[in-house]
Image (cartoon, rainbow, N blue to C red; front, side, top):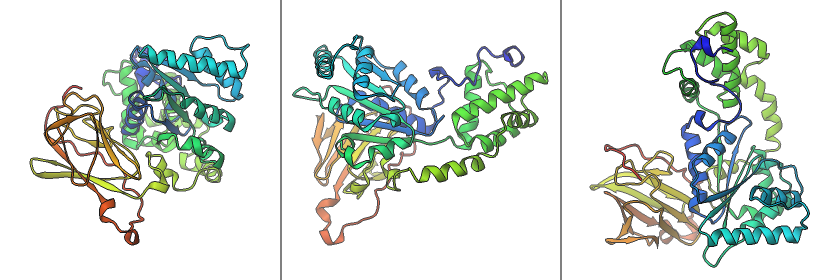
Length: 429
């Protein structure tokens, strides 16, 4: 192979998911944060969708590799199964041999296992990949499993990952009860041209390039043109281009090598290649409201009902609108509201907005949240409430108390924005 020629230690563009090669673009960082939120909260599903080759499986493998020892995981990848086969697959992941059990015994065994794990202070997580292939009957079984609870909380955390068709399936009228359990939906888009360049260089560096130039600068635009920023396609084209350079005994991948690889792969321009496919998919995709759901916002509840204003030392830094759903606040860019300050934890707190109220909740942060000088764990916000987070203040305004029925603003919810970094060194959570 070409490893010796390019002085690499490992193949940089293998298609198999490998957590060490994961490039966390902003969009992937946010999806990973939403996966991590399933460990903090037990009040609903997280749904992650993305086109084929967008990096869902690699993201899942990375997330799993970082879980604490007290998390028990069942990962189901074979999804073209019956309801009973699905329950059997879950129990196999948990160490059982359930193949002679009838459905009632399967459910009883699974319920007992979940309660036992909760009593042992262990968290149980179910991840279903390729979930777009699940039948409605299996999805209903998953909904029922999510209802297993103690007097305090649910005991099973659930992540559904799949292709965009999963959103259309979840929006079917007969799955409305399941959709009501979905806490967050997020869609993994393709990489931008800048991220695609950084992705290629990241994988080369992990493989041993140590910053050496292996692809000439002129190749990146051409590769983006033919891959559209889809990670799997980038891997395929980069690997084939390196093979073309290797065959020519050149230790630098030039535009000529990329062009040769494109010819060998018989690829056409990405936009042209996907236009017909997109036309077909548009007939299957959910309506435009799905763009709001992809960010965790239900379109039927997309009207802003409140807002928070972030200030520091008397200066207004940012204002965000609150629609029914969840906003996570913390130090890192993957939060809905970033406060880049050493007194703020990586994921510091969250605001949960419903049709009737907004609740702020501490996420086991180091320095906590304070209201009227008192540290609180969970607090229902009142209009005009001031919340102290480190050296910052969040002022909460409930627009419902100021809005008459005749003047309701029907504009769509304002998407969450990340706060531009302030001066200061990041702290440790």
